[in-house]
Length: 305
Figure 1: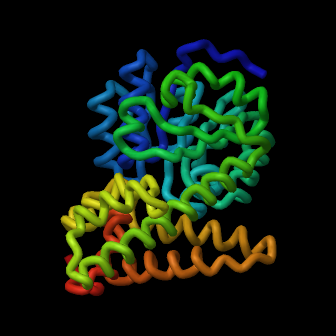
Figure 2: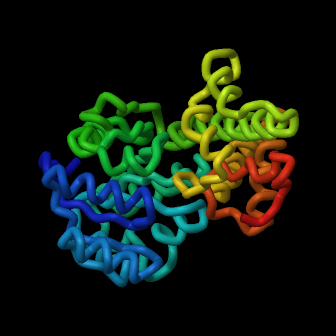
């Protein structure tokens, strides 16, 4: 395996909220960000200008420009497109390059990408994130990694800069296993979010003081992290996006598909996915997952914001 110094050159594919702030974090830690690519060209150019990088028009140019390429795209189709499209893709002339794939996608696609990368003489690691935008910028992401263990060990100096000097960095196992864990994390988180929205919505219908109700939730068996992160946003209808309803719907679907593969029935996950899909159907997929409260409060009930 080719050696990578403590400060390899870096590129990013997909620079939305998470990818852009990860790039800013690594730039601030002394890494040279050589190339930026995004399907929205203006987004790539803006960030490239900020970081002193090149905004690439072709994926093959991204691979040529850096030692380590982070990919932070939206879904299975997008992940396959950047690696497997005929003609221009990241695996053209990719021998010796290392790809760190951070998207929440189906575990089987992570395995597919690792196989394709190895065939091209490249290396692949999945690095699933269980954190949000502020953590991406501060370098305090909770990172769950999977793939070949030597690849993980070699990338530790880079990954540590994104995960609170490695205190939040976890190796899960072979390719696909981190994707499985991330799907379960989001399954439980989304169920908790939907449950909180229903509890607060019913509390509103009963005429209870919702701030008091939140305090009680936080100190009893109703406590979960979403009480702190989403509770006030649900009450105040502040759904500025940190994790979108569309992504919540997608990720619940990934977990449900895993359940089907194992012959399990997951009724809570199914009900939660249906709620987020309803929110998307109302044209509200781009608001934060806290927006599920728009379906549960008595004076909202699916109203457009």
